[in-house]
Amino acid sequence: MLPFNHTIVIINPFSPWFEIHEIDLSSTDKALAEAISEEMMEHILKFKQEVRHLGVNTITVGPDDMMSQVLATYMEAKKKGSAY
Image 1 (cartoon, rainbow, N blue to C red):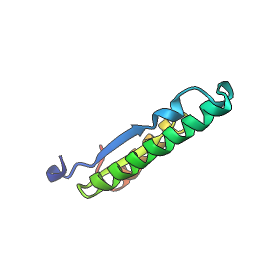
Image 2: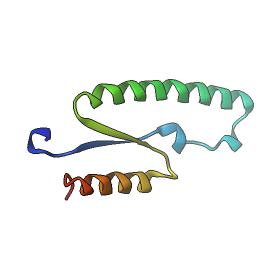
Image 3: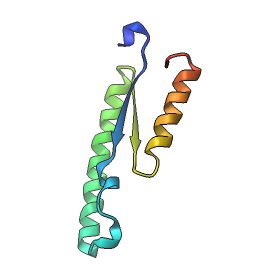
């Protein structure tokens, strides 16, 4: 895709942000969920660095900002002439 001047964007819905709200969790469950989220975010950041070298962009989104992030990224690509 890149040789044809296409922009590649990976939309990454960060799964812990889509799961049970903290209100429903005990303090132990909250601590465990936070530790898991941190570990997952480390993997995502490493992945982002690896694909950035290939010219691929990633956006990490949550349930509250998914559409706004996707539309903002699309509009930015459209301004640059790399989206149709």
